[in-house]
Amino acid sequence: MKEFGFIHMAVRPDEQIGLHEHPEWEISYVVRGSGMRTMVTVCESFGPGEVVMVQPDMPHCWAFDSSYSEIECMSLFFSNSLLERISGLSDGMAEVVRLATGTPDTVAFGGRALATLSALMAQMAQMADAQRMVAFQQMLLAIAGNDGKRSVGRMADDVEQRLGRIRVYINCN
Image: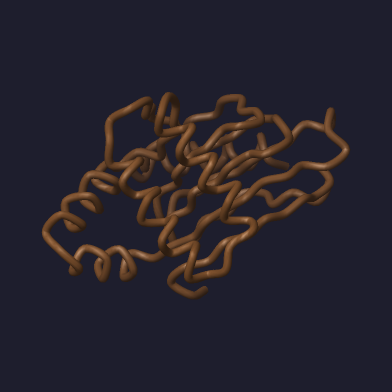
């Protein structure tokens, strides 16, 4: 994968992606759909309007329920090397990146951060890649604040991770 990518997709519930992980960060915005989200050892429900930032290499699964004929979501993927380059722009941007990515948790957003992130994600669907990069930096600013963040999963030790993978497999298959 490139260092930066955006996907806007609509899929039927039976086409969803099961348990997976990847080396990039992921910010996902659920436009339409609901179900159960599993992040390693944490499983909870989600619904339309939710924005979540997933850590790299974190096993996760979005199991959509069948009450929707089609699920719509947008996901932004970005690498640690991109974050390093953005950090190198200035001391201020280095601090923003540190605050935005300094937690070991996968986080869901509320409050002003949720409003900002969901609006920017929706706008990204109409943007070219260069415009998305500018919007991404605005997203980092919103994520760096402490407004409305809550943990929805974190990496676990080996035993917890193995048990979590079993739970995720059961929930997602």
